[in-house]
Image (cartoon, rainbow, N blue to C red; front, side, top):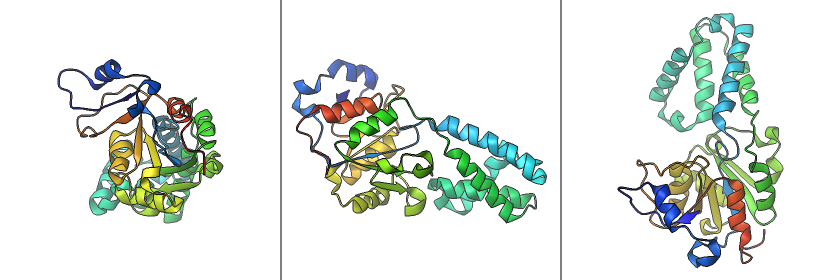
Length: 270
């Protein structure tokens, strides 16, 4: 689906989009841009993240009970939330550093229980390994294969997925993570780092992801093209301004690949 986003009062965005959507071939404005690279978000774009974190946290709680009984005695969700909030208050930069915040929270609760810092680091390493056990959306890997035949592929992520462990690192030219750059989406610096590493102008890149703010508004503000992967048919959130120009919206990555590869004028992979 591809449509002009304009402020809507009475009707939902999706109802409006359904009314004005038209086949790409019938409207030149709806054809894909000429690009050299497709840059992807990871969490909730290639795989659902909530079940991954739930499983990893449950496995970590079991690990703590076995290896650190003193920590297990104070290990509960409320304590972890309080420690996380305290860390963010002390170090606001951690708000967008998912890896640093997770490591710091684990270290804090181990210190509170009088457990060794080395054991806390073991616990974090265990969690980090569990966090890589993702389950792809059914469309994700086939879409990556299709896109890689025509475009260079990259990743920009605020998370700390390890693509080598997950087994898809070879598909991507560049992987940019917030914790290594020191800036997280929607900060322009993370998009600049990706463009610099790939040696491309922003206007030759398209970013696709699930979050309207981080994955649509932010990359467009830096000069990238953007596409919204809206798997659950959500309305555009009120807290984000509507983009002033056209933004393509797709129910999954295969639909994105269909759109990008259907136009024979699209550039071949460089």
